Length: 192
Image (cartoon, rainbow, N blue to C red; front, side, top):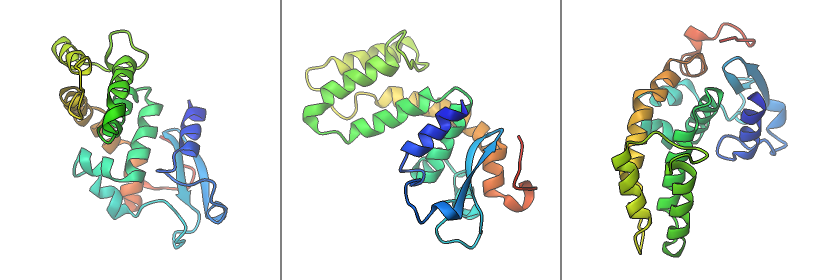
């Protein structure tokens, strides 16, 4: 499991560029029970990618605020990977990317997203009611799918995340130590 999180962190340029040589001396990966996490060695270092507590605290204002932060969305994704419940976020992100697709590529991408996440018994099937699943299939199979094909399904999944995994994330030691270090950080070798 931790290997998957580490691979994600390595690939994700939205979380941090691990290839930047100048940043390597300033950061280290800590293996926490709550997942891998980048922690500053020197809190005054401008090269550290770890956000200030004030920025992390803004993530608790709304799901949208969390997803608007590159670091926040990557940390949330790592949290979900640890819980084996990342398919909802992967679907939500795939739909966001789909909405920015070129019109000529939308039909193929819509079909791929449907096959990966919405179809019954799909590899990363998300939990949708049958009515939403059927409406989404109808939209995908239309002659000219547009950026709104997955709106209802995405809203349902977002609502589910806001009520469940997002709240668990906000209560996790991983988030609390980042947002409120003076209250929750006891040492550099933290356990969950």
